[in-house]
Image (cartoon, rainbow, N blue to C red):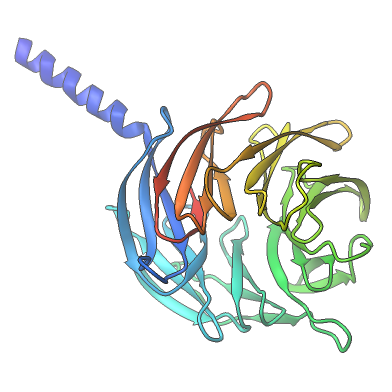
Length: 353
């Protein structure tokens, strides 16, 4: 009887320990020691990272996304003219390549999928194009069904990111300093407007984050070291705020990179490459306006991408040049960050929970 009770307690303990862990996939540039997509185990109780493994060897898987059911994973691969890859996620968290297709433009740098898991959009920084792909039920990708060329006679496009929101597709074009809106009709996308707001100078919109209801869009500007806050009312958009991401005393070279809202949307986070910090903003959930409340060192160099863990208690930063992932705890009351520890990883540029 005692033995049965012991093994029952042991089984429950092991099950609880296992439930505290989730997989973190890491997109990389395959130079130096990096060989492809890696995976780490992340403890959602303690914030610790462990058990680094190569999930698949493949060239330059620089940005990653899941299918909605998390059975498949997709990556951009920035080599030559560029391509996309689809993978099956195996029971041991390794990846099996399903197929790859052309990105239809040089320098693919971002990939996103719609909520239904039926369409993928890829941003081609070098080519200045957006490519849209149908997704098969087995996770494989069809060739691009639509390709939008943003280049004009007078302006060179550098499309940097795109996100679906319901039937809309929003696109950040760093080269043309604009955010575009595409709408879906008869299962195809059409450009609705030249730009949802006017911009001045050369801010370089790179990535953006939308609230869950789609009412607000927050754009981080690579060159402008700023965040542009945009409000949507019916079919109109208006800029409501523009906030700097740097400490006023910092005057050196800087390029912003990534941006994310907290799980409760009360706080906003942005990464500074140069100052090498995460800028923390408090968000007014009624007006949408934000105020910077903290700049904290990323304990590394060149924070390209960062993410929040599924619990919303931790923020993890991929420091490309210093080849480490820094882990921070999030104070849920204030939104501020506290550094916990870091983990050495070859060439991390994208983190995916």
